[in-house]
Length: 137
Image (cartoon, rainbow, N blue to C red; front, side):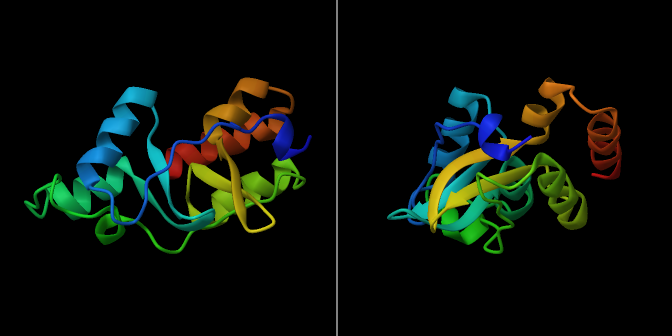
């Protein structure tokens, strides 16, 4: 199974200069735990709910005055739409992440999450891998 068959095609993103508060509001509005930080069509990083807690709230920073680029994770593991779901699971396990931006020709094309994979329930190995990744995080 290919990633483009199960990934989320509509992606909410923020710009590096957008506030952390804006990112958090979008996460709440769309019920998501991570938002790519994009400049133009290029992904510059990813900001997760965990990033907000550790790099903003725990540091007693003002979320409305702090830019997303200050709390984002700049090193982003990505996959391509034509990659296999097995490859994505390997990347998730290797980098201990639950969400992967999907990049096509340098442009953000979608997002793939463990939930997207788990909903497929196609392969028993995938379900086991998802459980293993979830337990490790």
